[in-house]
Image (tube, rainbow, N blue to C red; front, side):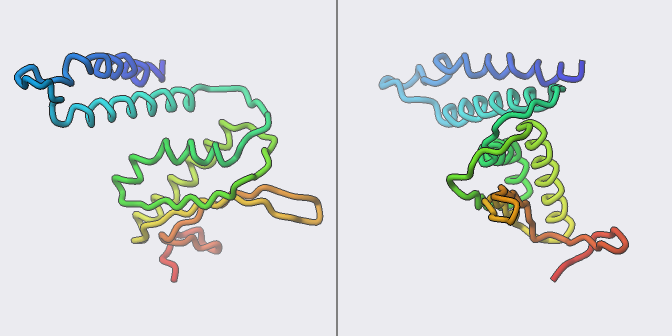
Length: 171
């Protein structure tokens, strides 16, 4: 079972969070002061549990289900999923999502997979090309065929040469 290692993390993290009452307070302090750093550890354990749940939901094979989707929420969920990795890589993500976008008809999980791939590729381009920024933009565009919602993932890393398919530095 491919999900087994990730699923095994959930109870371990739950155990850490479950001990918060026992480890939070320092019994050697008469006024019951909390131990230093415990709140941070517990907060990070809760965050890790949330990420694991998101990864499990994301990894499950699903049949394509098209429904009305809030593209901004899909983008925010994707950014939350990749936040830690981007912080470690010193990548700044700029969220330029327009408010009040109409819902779109699509598969939210497939859209999230596309955004994960695009942000991963952008982070790689940044690492390869010395940039530091990813900008995610969502906006409504008027066209002769009607209104369309458009999402864009851009970075300031190395570019891609359309002729020979080789990544290169851009100006």
